[in-house]
Structure formats: C-alpha cells, structure tokens
Length: 101
Image (cartoon, rainbow, N blue to C red; front, side, top):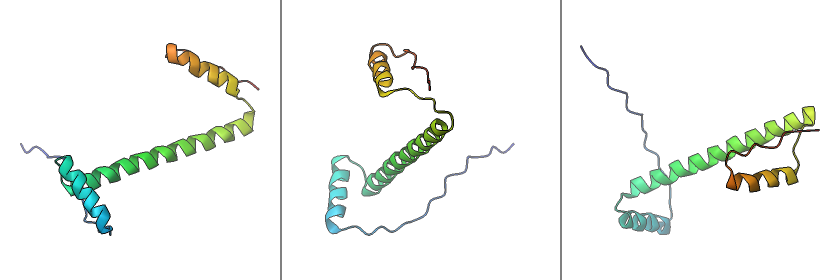
C-alpha cells in the first residue's frame, strides 16, 4: 500500500531590488542571527503579511460594528468600556458591559 506524502507548498523566485545599504543590513543581521539572508527576508515578509492581514481584519470588523450601530443604535460608552478594561486587568473573566441605546 502506497502512502501519500503531503504536497510541498509551491514556491517561486521573486526579484526584489534593494539598495546596497539594505542588502548589507540584511547580511549583517543574518550573520548575527546565524541565519541566511534568504531566511531573514522570508521572515520579514511573513511578519509583514501577518501584520497587514490583522489590520485588514480589524478594519473589516470595525466597519461591520459601525454598520450594526447605525442599524440598531446599540452601544456602550467609553466610560463603560474603560471601567470594564480596568476590571478585566484583575479579573480576566469580567463580563463586558451590555449594549444599550
């Protein structure tokens, strides 16, 4: 019986033009971390993508929240939110305040 091996992710070469000073910085950082410049650049791109995708998810959620507020008018005040944050620092299970009109 033949077991199937998981397919490796496909990769492609991409050319990025960097200034000499940027290449030197990457090379220096790679040496300090005992990694290759390739590793440093891939790690930087992955971190950037994760950060930007998280920002896009936040923006999408904020837009949805605003649309919901415009539709039904329910909200919590900044004071209610701030009090909850203060309480949540000592009690992570503190219930969020209920929305109201």
